[in-house]
Length: 210
Image (cartoon, rainbow, N blue to C red; front, side, top):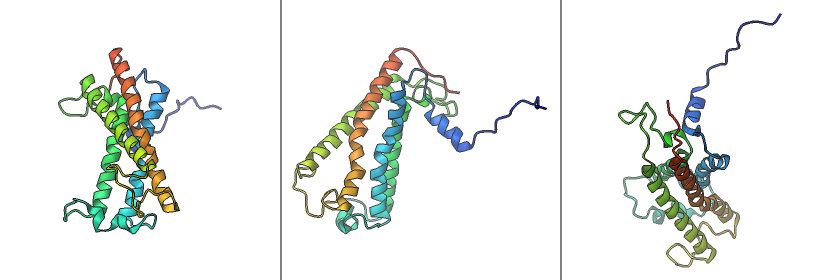
């Protein structure tokens, strides 16, 4: 005998609710934009993991000069290089994650849990200006970097040394190069998402955020 009791779905796990709240798209977002927004943080992830593996964890996947005194540059003496690399990688991932706001509800309406501003519409220009600048700068930076490396130069135009970590002539250099190549897509993807965001906002479609 079939039970007449209604089916009760188990409550969603907290991390699933968080994921959904951060990634749920607003109506009118095309599928390609949803995919592109998810891909943007992934373009940054390989280089972040490579930096942490080489500098912080000292894994033997690059030349030891990456962790030597010259690698510190102008970094203050009180800041451990390994910690700096971790913080830099986290900051890079958070910056890349802002691309999701160009398709998600929190990019158009401030979540209600935010004090004072909760529930208010995000001004279109407040999102478009930094997104546009970011897309232009990132595209120019990584395109110039890629062209320079292809010509055997660094971004300052100097000839690459024999110990340059992105030299693909050995497996270590190939791994490093593979970790940084995805960054070439960061700027163009962000630019495409910015254009789609501008078109959607100009049409007057703004998703509600509870």
